[in-house]
Length: 466
Image (cartoon, rainbow, N blue to C red):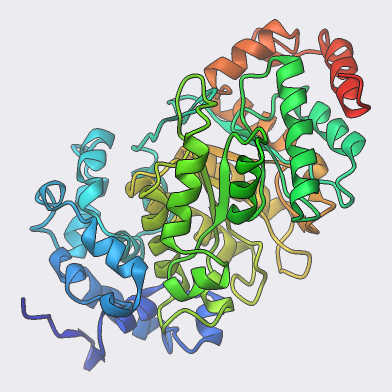
């Protein structure tokens, strides 16, 4: 096909763009990372002109004008080679602007979006997000429900799950156990009980896995556990017979950035196969857990002149190839060099959630910021509320919202209780039944009847008696 010329007239000025890569970058909402990389619009008129030009680009163009060359990047090859032309036919006649109208049309429901999803590429969904206001991102994303299963069923309508994140700077079993108890009695942990280890050594990671599994088993909790270690460590742990539920890995949108993480697609496939072979799920076998974040390619100098939001969406192509249980964007973790303040973090959170959902992923968010960013708890609360309205699958539950091991601010157990209360949401059904049976939930409210017995069980495991 003949590629279109990317240009738009704004007033008496004709704006020309040197390719789809530049057009996408200039059309992006302003953020510090793109600006520092020299990719941002020169001013508001430049940005609006790019959006006008982008709205006229036919969707099939994205299959020809690759922002990262097919020949040199395995993520690009994955995007092209896995593209489902049959699914694409329902939207192939649309421009980017027409695609926006289609997504927001009342006649387009979540079933229609899911049917088209295998034919939608990351660059297409990144492009349409750049034409949307925040409320558009919310309205379209909330149409889509992506349901996954392991020991619980996640992503159902009317449900909000949480990752219970009991990190400890010394990986102390008693400290981790106390945080798990704190989270469980406030209804957290149905997405996963997941620890970021202070050490990536196989022996220490194995000890944490056994601790989490004993607590889960002793208390009969219908959830999954994970130590968020490198995938090579997880594969070795599986070889040694450790109780691995989920295989975790951070991923990015270019081959070069993923090499910086020490991974490629073949290694991810090996990890998935090894984890799935354990057959530890009870209601399903979705066993992969991916984390992403805008700015990861740029921070690794592996962005190829592409804006950070488009690259973030490309990471989702990797995630959906492996049928994950969980995917979450850690939106403010990399720092203000990439997302400077609360407004930029909010926009990124809604973009990431929208793009992931349209691409068919079970999207969660780590609504977070580092202590040197221009953001605070009120920003997190606003993002939390809007993400809940948008239908986010899960959020983080961190004791006091302050991760003492990773040194950043996230969302707390109390935040999840707030969101479930104001939006009328419940935990995953299997986990909800367990809370009721454990004496922690009655008439939709958390209660304290079961706390002493649960505490005794968890602390006994932590001290080696369980």
